[in-house]
Length: 65
Image (cartoon, rainbow, N blue to C red):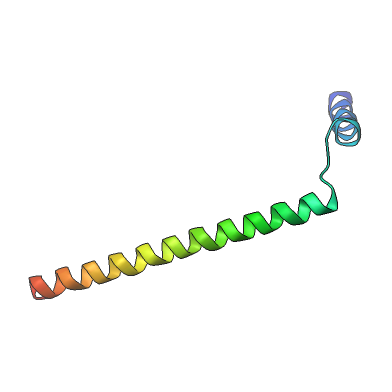
C-alpha cells in the first residue's frame, strides 16, 4: 500500500507544481476552437451519410429492388 500512497502523492505534487494550467481566456478560446471543429466534422459526416444514402438509392433503383 506504500507504493500506491507514493503514487498518489507524486501525482498530486505533479498536478500542483509541474502542470501548466490554462488561463480562463485560453480555456475559452480552445473550447470555441473545439466546438467549431466538432461542427465541421459533424457536417462532413452528415454530408457523407446523405451522399451514400442517395448513391445506394440509385443503385437499388437500377437493380430493381
